[in-house]
Image 1 (tube, rainbow, N blue to C red):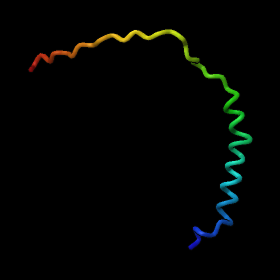
Image 2 (cartoon, rainbow, N blue to C red):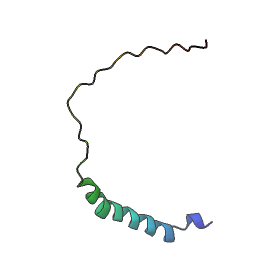
Image 3 (spheres, one colour):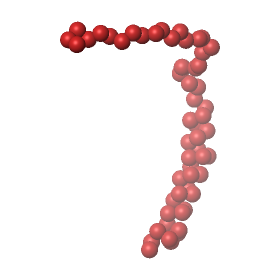
Image 4 (cartoon, one colour):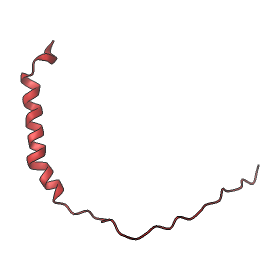
Length: 55
């Protein structure tokens, strides 16, 4: 059963995890969001169901 042999896939998983956590993640976290959240309260309007003309 080749799944139980950790030699090829464990090194690839470890290398990809380290690449993501040390290189890609700091680059992604440095971006500022384009639409920051606001403190404005939203108004919810009550909608009425539309009456179908053929019923």
